[in-house]
Structures are given as structure tokens and as C-alpha cells.
Image (cartoon, rainbow, N blue to C red; front, side):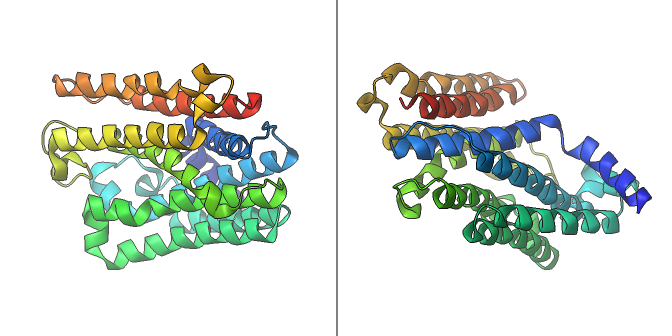
Length: 296
């Protein structure tokens, strides 16, 4: 067991970088703040917020462990330094880690509400289902657009978990379906980065790049469309012109220039820079948190 813990610690250090944790924290904070703003009440982090952050953080690690196993065949060709490929961790180690994380995530969420526990269980089960589906379906495994359609909902389920948990514990006046459109903001923010990081000028045979299917211009356009989705959904839901701090609510509009700049640089012949899409996510989430905190 000591060996398993050591190998899992090594896996976490290599495959679960600090920016993944930062992303999880900001994701929860920004979603909570947006829900509070829609309910016209100032957002303040609570002990329940801290527990949700912990649950989301370990579930993201769980999903990373699932990915390591379901992508093993691909990684043996294209990512030969991955821990499971090199033997730095074993499949058994990862499954033990997944079982422990699943138990902790469900138990921790149950402290919040039954709905929270059921929602996080759906995330965990969906992750396992993806693993099984990719094992039996080459179409889902190898067609990157089909794979995106099938795999992205796990992110929506994590968003739904936070939404359900907040509505259960914070007694906000809005219901689930009234608040659910906020997920579009977070979907657009993530997917613009997802397309940017898997876009290249030339074909990458055998690699999972959106530009292999859509071409470099098409993949770039898709990334920018998701930027527009994130900003448009934010403006449509929050309607900052109805609040006192209009300038704060309108900040996502100039933030969209960041991924736009990255796209222009790429189309002019350089590599697609991931910095601007990342900064867009961080900036957008920071604006959402600030809006919720000041009740803008």
C-alpha cells in the first residue's frame, strides 16, 4: 500500500499541475458568484464553498486518472513520457485512487445535501462510462469531434453539481432551470481553450487535433465562436447595464481581445499561443467573482 501511495503521489505531481487546482477553485467561485448575482444577492464564500472546492478538486484528479487509462493506447504512440506508459504508476494504483476519491467525493457532498451527493455520483459514473464507451467504440475514440460531443458533458455535470449544491445549501430564490443557462458562460470559456490548444497549421496524422478535421481556419473560427458564446451568455444573463458598476460587467468584452489576438498571431503563421485563451478564462472568471462579490 505504501508503494501505491508513493506512485499515486508521483502521478498527481506530474499530471495534476497547480493550474488545474487553480482552475477548479476559480470555476466554483465564479459559478457561485454568478448564481448570487442572478439572485441579486452579494456573494460571500461559505464553509459549503470550501467543501465544494475540495470535492471538485479531487474529482478533477479522478477524471485525470480515468483519462490516463482510457488514453493509454494513444499515449503509447504520442505521449511516451506519461506515467502509465512508463510504468511510474500502474492501472491498479489508479483504480485504487479512483475508488478512494469517489468515496470521499460522495461522502463530502452528502454533508452538503442529498442532491449534491447524487450530482457528484453522476459525474463519477459518467467518467467511468466514457472509459467503457471508448474501449468498445473506435468511432468515439478516434473521431475527435464525436469524442468531444461525448466527453464534454462531464464538464457540464460538474457545473450542474455546483449549481445544485449551491441551490440546496444557500437558499437562493432561483431554481435549477432558471440558473442553468449560466453553464453556457463556462462552456464557452473552456471550449475556446480546448480548440485553441488542439489547432495547428499542418495536418497531424494520428493526433487528436481539431484542425485535422476542420482545417486551421475552421478550428480557429470555432475557438472564437466559443469566446463569443461565453461573452454573449454573460451579457445576456447578467445584463450589467442594469447594475451600478456597468464598467465591471462589461469587462468581458475587451477580454475577448485576448483570444482574438492569439488567433490573429496563429493565422499569420505562428504557433497557436495558449497564453491568451488561458488569460481569457482567468480574466472572465475574475470578473464574474468580482461582480458577485460587490453585487454589481
